[in-house]
Image (cartoon, rainbow, N blue to C red; front, side, top):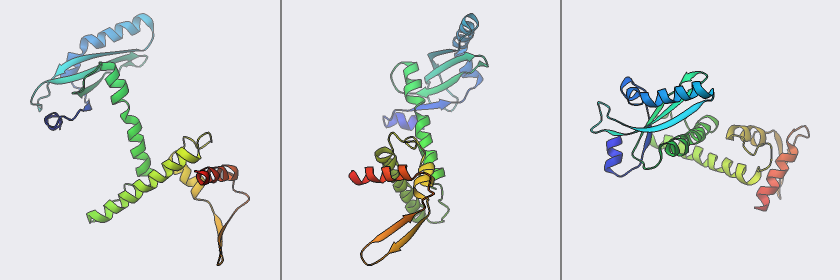
Length: 202
């Protein structure tokens, strides 16, 4: 994968499993972090570049080593990258940012059933995934446009779906209009009507 990215000029930053060889390359950095923690009593995070070549790699590559030492002891981490820039900035601002992306993927899988691809044929599974993606886009728009400044401003899709969309109502239809009659016991009435008003005004 790394070689393919380099051949096609694709930047990457990927976590690297700890092993004795790469830890030996960063041993001085880890000792420096440990000594600083012992001297100050404060958690230490130090970063450095090391050159490392796994047995399956075709050449040595840049590895960013993070030597962290705190109350629980040493916690080294390693990432391999072909990106340019300062080691700590790449680790904190680029590599760690993946966590938020993973949260959004998990939100779509768990709350909007993007993982329901059990059909034996490809197209039905693709349609399910597209519908799930559309549902996520709609709920994200509701969160962004209708819910800022409310208790659901940072709510996950499942919470918005449960509290604003999955509510009981009586539907009354005649020739001219359709009426939705909600329960007066619904606890989020004010928030619901505020969200509707914001969406209607947009």
